[in-house]
Image 1 (cartoon, rainbow, N blue to C red):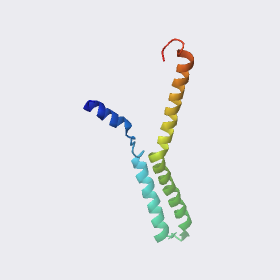
Image 2 (image 1 turned 120 degrees about the horizontal axis):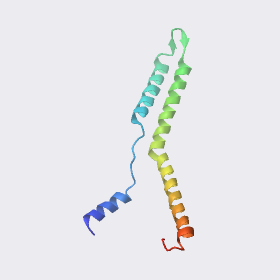
Image 3 (image 1 turned 45 degrees about the horizontal axis):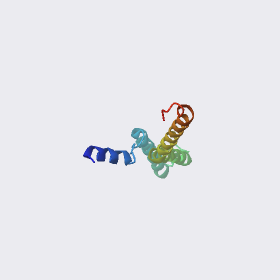
Image 4 (image 1 turned 135 degrees about the horizontal axis):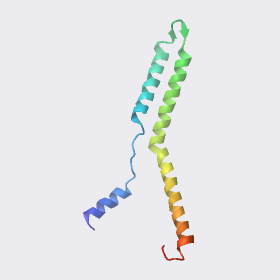
Amino acid sequence: MSIASATLRSTISRKPNYGIDSPGMVFGEAAIGTIALVCAIFVPRLFGHNLRWLEIAIAVEFLALLASMLVYSKSGKMVIRDAILNRLRGAATSACSTQAAGAGWC
C-alpha cells in the first residue's frame, strides 16, 4: 500500500467538517440578542415607556435564531447530505438493475 492510497483512504473515511454557515450572521444574532438581554436587565424603562418585555422578546428571538443556526450548521446539513446521497445511491442501483442490466453495463 502506498502512502498516497493510505492518505486518500484516511481522507475519505473522515467525517467532513463544513464549519458554521454565515459566521457574520451568527455573530450578529448573538450580539443583538445579548444587547437586548442586557437592556432588558439594566434599561427596562426608556423615555417613560416600559420596554422590558419587548427587549426580552427580542433577546429570546435572536438567541433562538442563533441556536437554530448553530444546530443546523453542526448536524442539520449532514442529515440532508446523507438523505441526498442515499437517494442517489438508490437511484443508481435501481437504474442499473432495471435499464442497464440487460446490456451488461452494471
